[in-house]
Structure formats: structure tokens, C-alpha cells
Length: 420
Ligand code: ADP
Ligand code: MG
Ligand code: MG
Ligand code: MG
Image 1 (cartoon, rainbow, N blue to C red):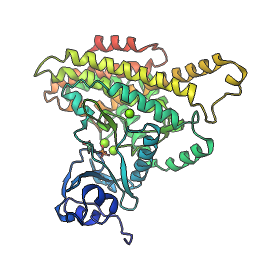
Image 2 (cartoon, rainbow, N blue to C red; image 1 turned 30 degrees about the vertical axis):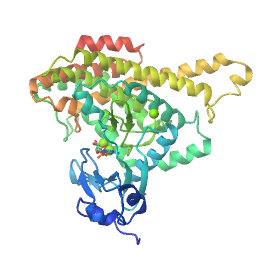
Image 3 (cartoon, helix red, strand yellow; image 1 turned 135 degrees about the horizontal axis):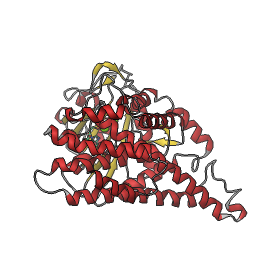
Image 4 (cartoon, protein in one colour; image 1 turned 45 degrees about the vertical axis):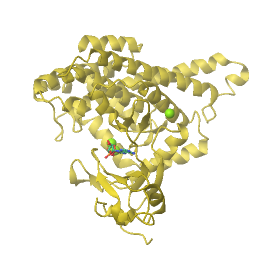
């Protein structure tokens, strides 16, 4: 087909525009079996940035995700390049290779039209939604611990062939505008009265105190420095509970359009922050029954996610350290296995402290910044919402500022219970 300038899809135009693409037609049931006009198309995007369509036909279904040249949440006053779709596509391919089965299968990519055709995850629901509903999913901690360890280790110089890693570093370095969103919206705006910020009315005093908190501001800017400069591995970049889809037994990770080479701790910190926010939001969802068991479950998920991450990272360190940073000539090759274990502990300890810094900042930006999360937002009673958000803000402050002095997760479970 002749190349065509970018044009946003709609429910009406999608069948005609994608009906002739073999990869789609063979999946959904193409014109031969069933005219494209009879595809059933729904737009389901509930994210902040892109269009997401579910296409169903005689043979099956697929998801079509298309970027728009602006931020959907804000409108065309905030342009955002289409190339984020390119980074999402390339990240999905790499994640599938590094942790098979963890992401939706990709069937087709059109760079010009910034669209990805991928597996329709069904009956999966967004993890955040499941947690708001009080569902205790048995496998998410294990699956997400494995996903983070495998993708983050295998995208780094501990594992990758050095030439290939540097090429990937260059490829993803162009995801400038999405990094810029994180740099501003996550690390900076929450800590001053930026124009797009908002917060629940009852929090005014608390917000003033946090914005005057010198130690916190310095901690947040240290984390921003690490985020922007430490190109350790290909991170997902937006790994919150709205980027995970689940059934009772399956966990799939979606939406890596923010992918870039950044610090290993970033994805883990964002993920755990979202579990901690879910924890502190549970009192706001007790109308139809106690969430005491859900709170225990969430603290368990946080501990297990970290433990699985650490164990799998260690396992890969011992069995797959093939990259430029393998250090074998200094350690194992000289019979010094202890040196290798010592170096591993050093790396993991650094990830732990940075993870806490990123988590604390993520908790603040979801309560003080532009993009809030449904865990708190669906608590309609504003006084009750403020009562849930206050301990989350305090917890975030504690872990960001004290990240180098917190020794273990049980300390944080105790703190969470004390504050809640
Ligand atoms: P955005 O980048 O705009 O946040 P997402 O990739 O997060 O877009 O997708 C938005 C929503 O579309 C998700 O919350 C989910 O409900 C739905 N969705 C996205 N990808 C799939 C998929 N592969 N299968 C089923 N639903 C999906
Ligand atoms: Mg999303
Ligand atoms: Mg898996
Ligand atoms: Mg997205």
C-alpha cells in the first residue's frame, strides 16, 4: 500500500484501513471470510495518552493501539511525538525475549501510523482495578518480581553483548519527550505550586509542609539526577498497577511507551509505590466490608515482589553474567566466588536504596501532581480520601529521605501499619 500521512483511526474508519493488512485479517478474520465492515470495533483507551481499540471478527480479536500527536488527557495544546509508538513496539519485542509470555504478543507495527496490533488480553482486567475491588491475586508478586529481574538484568551490561547494548542505548535515547514528562511531572512539579498540580482539599497544610521540606526536595532532585543520568538498562518506564493486566492466574505487562535506558531501580520503585498506595487507599473502599485481609495481602505482595526480584536477579547474576560487566576474570576465574557474591550484594543494596527513593517520589506525584490514580480518586468522600492520602504522603517522605538508612522490608511493613 502507498505510504500515507498519519491519520488517527476511528471506530468507523478502522475496518477499511486495517482490513487489507494480512497480519490483522488472519487474526480477526479478514475480508475473504467476513467483510471488514462487519468487524466489531470498540475504543477502550482509558489511559492518558493514546487510542486503544478492540477489534472483534469471525475468527478472533485483536487490540489496536495508536499514538496521537498530542497528550490525550490534556488535548492538542500539548504536542507529543508519535515516535513513542516505535519505542513501545521495540520495548515489547525485547521484554518478550527477556521474559517470555510476560507481555501481549505483537502482531503488526506501522511506524508511519504509530500503531501496534497486539494480542487482546481477555478476560484480563487492569491490576489497579482488581486491587480497588479487593481481589487478592495469588501470582502477581511472583510474576512481577520475575518480570522486573529478568527484563532489567537482561537489558543491562551485566548480560548483554556490549555492542548490542550500546546500539540499544542509542535507539532508545531518542525517547526524549516521554523522559521529559517523567522528569517534570514526577520529580519536580509535585514539590512546588506547578500550574497543572492538584490535590484533595483537606491536604493543604500537609502539602505546604512537604513543599517546604528541604531534605525531601533534595532527595527528589537526587532521584531525578539518577533517573536522567544512570543509563543502566532498558526500563519499562511506566510500571504502575495500570500497566499490568491480570486474571486470577495470569499477569501481563502492557504500555512500555516510556521505555529508555535508565536505572534498574526505577521500575521496581514505581511498582512497589503503587502497591503501597493501594494499601493506604483500602480504608477508603471499606463500604462493603473490611479490607483488613486485603491490607495484609498487599504488604505480603510488596515483600514477595522484592524478594522474588532479588532472588531472580541473584540467580541471573550467578548463571547469566555474560556482559561487559561480568568481572569473571577477577572473580570466578581466580577461584574467588566470594568476590562475585560481594559484588552482587553491593549492586542489590544500591538498587534497594534507589528503589525506595523512586517509590517515595512516585507516591507524592500521584497525590500532588497532574496524574492521579484511581485507588484514591474513586474514594468520593473527600475527607476520607484525604485521610487515606495523608499517611501515603508521610510514608513517601520517609522512604525517599531515609532511603540509605532503611535496612529491610519488615521495617516498612511496620511503618505502613503505624501510619495507616
Ligand atoms: P495508554 O498508553 O494510553 O495509557 P494503555 O496501553 O495503558 O494506553 O491502554 C489503555 C487501556 O486499554 C488499558 O488500561 C486496558 O484497559 C486496554 N488495553 C490496552 N492494551 C490491551 C490489550 N493488549 N488487551 C486488552 N486490553 C488492553
Ligand atoms: Mg497506560
Ligand atoms: Mg511469566
Ligand atoms: Mg501509556
